Image (tube, rainbow, N blue to C red; front, side, top):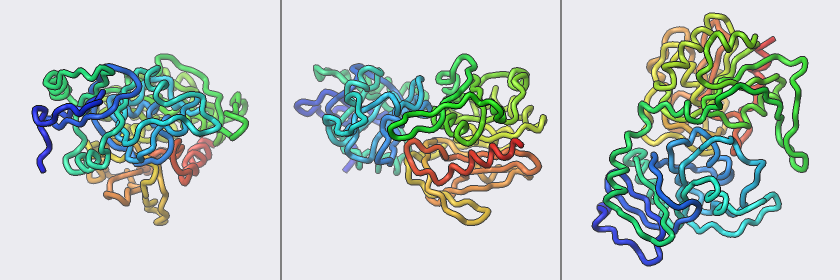
Length: 388
């Protein structure tokens, strides 16, 4: 059956929210969180835990997250599980209504938290059908809208979705990067103890370029043995070198890597020429690849979830990883001297590189997880050990 156009999708009784795709597909549901409307790219995430971390991951800026796991919000929210103080996803789509929280760590409801953060949610959607649609047709642009009165101007929402230019060409890193440098002292979390701390005394100094980073990345760098200074993503080469880094970390982040690379790539190339060790994750992986002469491409549907198998090509070990990206490094474009180290077992896309003769490597996935498995923490240790 063909997908309905707006005129063929009447509003059901009780509907207080609507999703309007740029191709005219309309899905009705029950709104929660903030009222109003927002535009973005619709993606799906297959993780069964960590919805609060996902919603506060800056890599989701400009995106509307479809959760394939049906029960979202059932463990509530808390301050410890925030991944960033900056904006993440603009909204989310879920199957079941958000229920009262049932978890000893809960400090509030997901519904109230979404409203306080200005994020829109829609419950009651057929998320399986929407996920299949994305897999077949690619990630669409859309408008998500919530009106407690159930009043919507569907043609206007459709026009807004069609007018949005999409993520290609967008430099969203500049929107979610911090505006000033700061010393990072937070360490890993432990049940009953919260987050640890380290003043970094006597440790190798890592300067982290923030393109929209998750806080748990910095905590894992500290946990692996580093002293960490976080700087804005557009920090100049001279200012980075003035901090006398033993190594430089390139963070995750949202948007088109080619757009962010216009100012980040020259800095990374200067760091490579200076012989500074480099470790990149997600967007940072793409930045390092661009600096080395490779190209990036927009993916059909992207990879987002906590169960993605990746093969480590050096020894054929398979790591189960956490991922969140809609762009990828084009493996066919890797120049001589850039070695592919990891590869997705889902679609064969590139998931890691290393530059020959340089202490520089990166991975497409998230070794800090949050949420997800911890198979890949060894990469933090590898980076810190390379700084000696």
